[in-house]
Length: 322
Ligand code: KG4
Ligand code: ZN
Image (cartoon, rainbow, N blue to C red):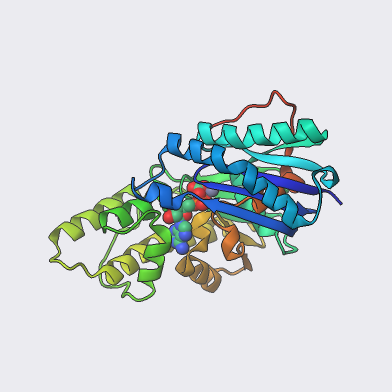
């Protein structure tokens, strides 16, 4: 019955959480840096690293206190090893190493993408095999998980990630960073048939979102002001969700998987959740809202299912290890 502390500092959220057996959250603390980065329209790595350094100890202390356990009662300390920003990852890893050393606890490295997938295990009974649509700010992939540890990438984006496309389109519409949730909200009030935006034409299970972003830009340039924001958001969202849903179901059919799961920040998207659920021939599972975007509960959950025990000489990585 292991209970792990998870620490997440891969980008702009400083987070710590304690999770029992990978599925039961005892505490979940998060300090977002969004207000700091908003003024720059995106995450500034050096500023992010500094902010993590200032707050990580406090967030960890809060998470352990809230869990009702002491550090000595934990079974291990997990940290996000990558992919992410090297400077920010180092902060979380060093905090984890120090605690593991001081309290003589197991040190566990967790892959950020595997952690997003593991967010699905929290408060649920689901288990592999399944097809996972992993959609975040940095990645867009369809992955077939035969077991908890190994995922086979069946398709990826050739350019922008889905979340990145959301953030770039939000920016060109003059909306605040990060734009995904804002566009999603506006889209609920808009007409998705108002504009015909193209799905990227890419073979197989791969994706491309850069053409869609350019199509929105060209349309916006020709439109009189004020822009019909709700309709633009709804039409853009429809184009993104259409292709994500279509290819995910195609992957399900090719593999014969009996379950589809959604993961990553874009998994919070209302239209994506709804459309996939309506169109999928097999059950669809997604993480609870607060566990879609970066958080530490998913890190502590992943530590249980697919974490890697490491020594104090472990390092971080910025790009995905395939
Ligand atoms: O997984 P995440 O927190 O960080 C990365 O690992 O990248 O994902 C953040 C991304 C951002 O691009 C954000 O705009 C997007 O997820 N996002 C959304 C929604 N909520 C967050 N995109 C679409 N609809 C949403 N409701
Ligand atoms: Zn993430």
